[in-house]
Image 1: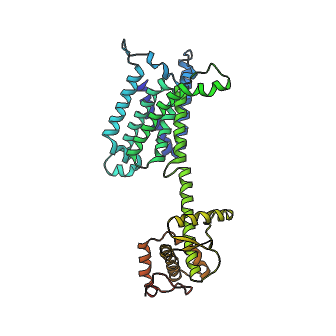
Image 2 (image 1 turned 60 degrees about the vertical axis):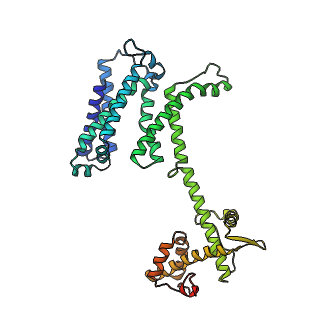
Image 3 (image 1 turned 90 degrees about the horizontal axis):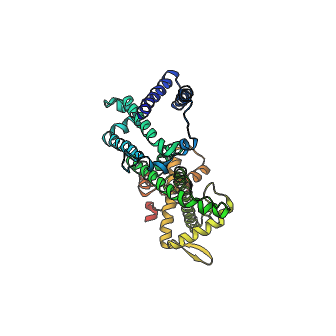
Length: 381
């Protein structure tokens, strides 16, 4: 069966490439054609040559991982599934360890691999054969659901947590192992806890393979929500944090302009794209955060800049007015367009970029509206 799986795996890869090349279709469509055709051929062969063979649907779907201990090697107590899967795992580790560089370059850049003297097509077929053998070796003991789950979910989970290939492989293995162990423990403990309060007194445990797939899905859900770089919650937290930083900086700049007597209106602190109804809450958070940092103080019920706050506000206003000067010099824009653009960019200009802007603009003393640029030679004097 393993030899047949390797043969069909290579055949699948070959036919997929052939259909993609000759039919001029994308890889996904080509794989769909080949997969469904071979699946239909397999069903036809079962019907013609093995019609009397009993196939347990539950065993095919969920496997019988709890009973593998009863099928041992010879007269020993070692499960046959353990020997088979450990052997396949050892071969996979040997393949990846010995050919890691070749597998990586042929997978992600076949053209470069070809120029380096590798044979990406041959490596691809070897990889497909190894994958096929691994799937068939695990299929009998864990069933198709867990095989497909462990083929896809740990890799997807790891890709949400890291972008480095070597780390991704290690994290994927860890996720798969955690799913298997956690699934087994949940299969023993969770059903009774969930179903007995509902009146199902006979429910004591569940299928390890099925619950392991659930555990893998839960780990994927956690990664989708909490991944540092790609998680939904993490991304929302970053947006809120950045919005609060923009609100704080807008408040600093507004207080500085009030001291300049440029305007007497209360500065807006609502970030772009945020509903206006959140403005009072964001203002309170901004004032609290700036007060905590020692940048503002409360005088007569209103925030006022401290010395350190005025220094930070000067830097922000300098960024704004230098960018306005840069835009006015290099682009033909109405004066009322300069302020909005500078208001967005001022939050991203660091000291190095400000120094480059000032040098290119020959250290201007005033912006296009005639307002003094903080930190200019005139203001320093």
